[in-house]
Length: 84
Image 1 (cartoon, rainbow, N blue to C red):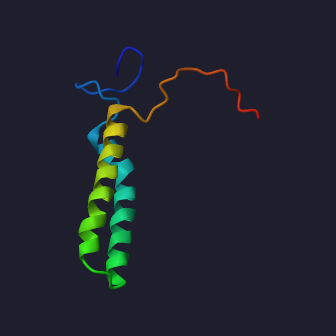
Image 2: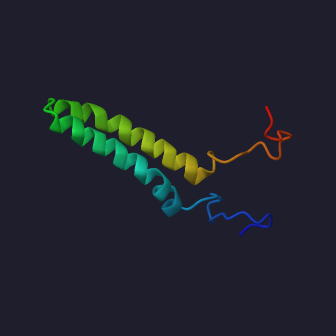
């Protein structure tokens, strides 16, 4: 724990690799599941090679964002009370 009470590791990251992987894993599973479903429908396997890189790229970007703390609120305490 840091002095401000937030959890960081030696590299200064707020969340660990395991926590980031657990958050991103359902999205990877959905992407690969959709890919397998499309291939079972009888489309050319070339579509698998075309669809897999964007799924993995977005998943890696999400992992980096969660691991690095980019996905957290960085604006501090706002004055928004939740009203319309």
